[in-house]
Length: 56
Image 1 (cartoon, helix red, strand yellow):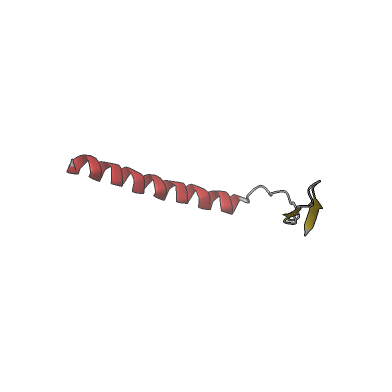
Image 2: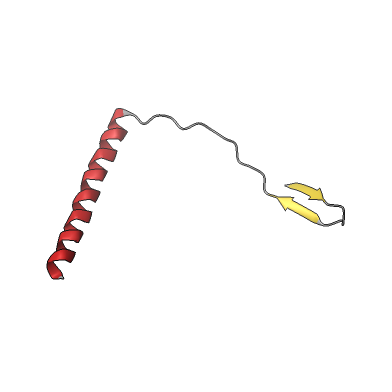
């Protein structure tokens, strides 16, 4: 834990920062999975909007 003391003697505790890493570009099968998820999400939102408009 990282601790500092200011001029009044008050302790300030800071959490340790995690190790940074760079994200990797998604593989082609992951990209396809994201496309399928987007299609299903679009269908759900569109269905909910159409049901909402038809009820009102």
